[in-house]
Image (cartoon, rainbow, N blue to C red; front, side, top):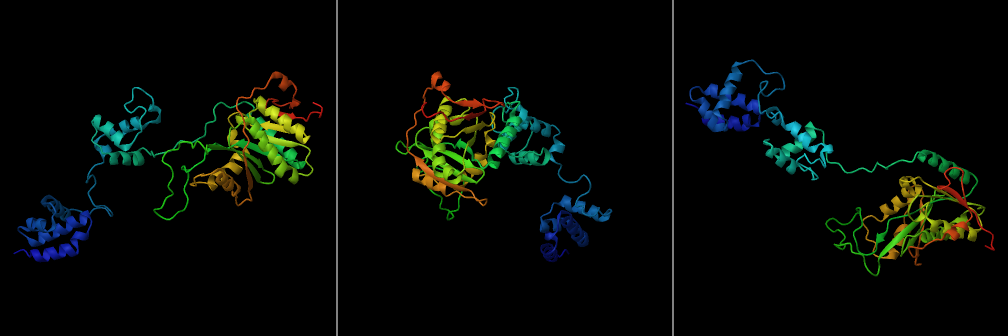
Length: 403
């Protein structure tokens, strides 16, 4: 008579805790020891299939498996790619980056999610789930979800690197002579109000800061235009926060304010001012108003203003971008810019471990757009282009007082 109670106790204490092969061998050993009817009794106690116990009996009679193996070579469930040789190729065809926009491809201009890929593969006769698709993408095709990366700058000017070298030489010469060099640019316009601002900041868990659902401009508060000036020699920045438009007049007025508040007191032996700027925007190399306003400033401070523009499409190399603006954005991350005063305070509070200091003030002047500059006004300017690319490099000389 088979002692089912003893078999059950041994199974619960030992056999049920083994791996696949161990359970099979344990059940086979108990069935062989039980004798006639042992296979059925052990199957009822352990829940293992009779065929599995019979296979275990064959394993007991056969040679031992190689160390570490649970099944015989070729045993177990085969991978989906082994049973469906066309699956991997069709999946790769669907996710191939070059297929976007190809009218002959089934997934054209759509997000290649696991669910959509699985649906398309099922339509082609492949029985796969979204989870299987995700595993194949990662393990077999070495794919992962990726964001766009800004690396392409468009057409490159043949003298791009030469202009960088020219700017560098001019900057070093000015700094060696103790003359100020400033990098200028306008930061993107910012909405004023209780609007979402990008980034994250520490707050009590489960208590995020509530902001407006829609980013509709407040008619009274509107937007602000931060124009920055960065002095790489002293690691000091200045930002004028405008409330109307980003024009050349606003940009030059910002430089003028920097000159009065920071430049003249710091550079007591100033004889010339050097400006590095982008090739577009309010300080564009082709802007007539920019040059007219610079001429007014040169006349006012009675000293030359040397200007060097970065080549088109290279604004990210402007030092102000990665020495000043990026730190301002980091400082006010996740903080709604609820007022103009808040913008000024947040900018002025920006510091870094390398010693960056920033001063800021609100410019409430009104700057009109669309100001036309006549040819006569241009002819009256005393702007002398440099030998190398005079359209990018020029010096604005002060005119006699009687002009």
